[in-house]
Length: 277
Image (cartoon, rainbow, N blue to C red; front, side, top):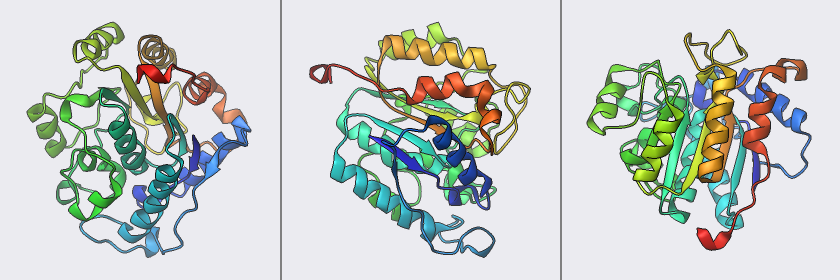
């Protein structure tokens, strides 16, 4: 199942995220992507904060649409062009329910594992992993198909972490190395008997000197070639049942030139033996 869901409300006021998602959709030119309509509830500068979450009503309304669509279709594989990182709670929780040995690979400069009450910004795109752990805003639990365990989370490119996030990472013994070694990660995943993966890719995991059309620019990130190597190795060793490309703010096709191989790797069609799932 291919989904186009340009949610921006989870980033606060970041409408450049929506146009960035549209640019990637235009680049791929794939008519199989299904568009999930965004909420018309006022958001951004006119948004309302509830439960320490900005634009809460808009986010939950449109995520409910996403959940309903996935629940109706019951896909084996999910590919998503987005949008902000908050949208991940629906596809990841669905695939986690479907595949008991799922690992979640989080390519991201940010940990995205805050509780609403700990978040400095109150923007939901910094909270999806905490929500997926079942430790987020309880009123959002109805959006989840299942909850994950801390041992399923593996960060790549992480380098901007809030204090409360670091505490949760440490307490959960979550894989979050300063520099990721892909061979080490592959062996770790295999030692956990993980067979299926979801690849979350926020483009701010990359070094801004390589690609800077991202909602946030965080120095000392992954080189593009490193990211490609990581993705390829994970695809060679595991069954990829879901992937996303998120928070690019490129507004014309030429700006995507540096990351076109990453887009193709993550959005390409996958075929696998369903009996192995």
